[in-house]
Amino acid sequence: MITFCTLFDSYYLDKGLTLYRSLENCTENFKLYIFCFDDVSYNTLNELNLKHAIVIHHSEIEDEELLRLKEERSKAEYCWTCTPVIIEHVLKHYGEPNCTYIDADLYFFRDPQVLFDEIEDAKANVVITEHRFKNDWNGRRLCKRSGKYCVEFNYFDQSERAWQALTWWKQKCFEWCYHLYEPDRMGDQKYLEKFPELFQGVHELSHLGGGVAPWNLGQYKLERIEKGQPVLTDIKNGTEFPVVFYHFQNIRYLSENMVNVSSGSHSKKTKDAIYRPYLKEIEYSRKELKKYGITFSVKKIYSSNKLIAFLQGNVLRFKVKSLTDVYRLEQFR
Image (tube, rainbow, N blue to C red; front, top):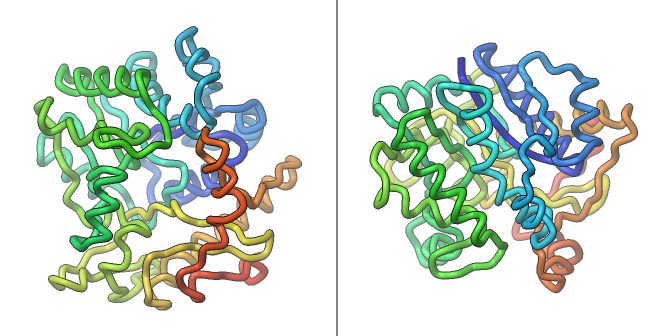
């Protein structure tokens, strides 16, 4: 049984539900601990009665220290602060042999068992996933800003090695976890760069299909589609691989009927193979959630800095690098 955990509030409920459905479509061999960060998401998911989900209210993990940090940080920064907390909670209070954190805006195209076969073969206690930025000026700039590794697919088991890494990460996130770019830290993410140096049993996920995202999609091209599942090829070296999961991080809504996916790819064929299935599923989830009176804002804000938050909500979402990154949503409804 594969054990995952994730967290989100009602603002991300469409993405979280779509993540769950994607796993359900790929495998029966999983359970997903969902930490709900508001009452609306908690009550709605309980009503949906998802077979493989364990729905947890945020109050179950919040102690006095976390509540203090909640007052100091933006909603997104607080969620980042809680990432190691929810992994710890699943391991400690539910006694799972291991737990893998996954971001709510992931989507699984294939059974993730192949990733866990790699973890088992590596005898890993902790798994971190590279951004795999392109090795050029912009890629090196992004790596310097955001870190070599991405908080998107992070595995910890019950070993002493894993507990040392998880406890250290949690302490660091409590000390500082903001949407600011500093030499050694950014949110909860750049701390992961210290893992291979400080701890044993740390494995970098090598399967290219685990961690495809807008920041690396431009390095790949669509080879073919197998039963609705995209298979990509690394343009530089010709390596072919199936997409296991994709991280839909940069999607920004221009209006209720139009979205800028910010794919990072110039190939319409490649982006269509990946983004069209996801947008269709997101629209289905939104339709389902409307029955519960849930609607969604077109603005995406995650900084505690008021100026940056204003730019995120009112300017950055209109930054379109490719016209084929813009999709009309009526076709998916």
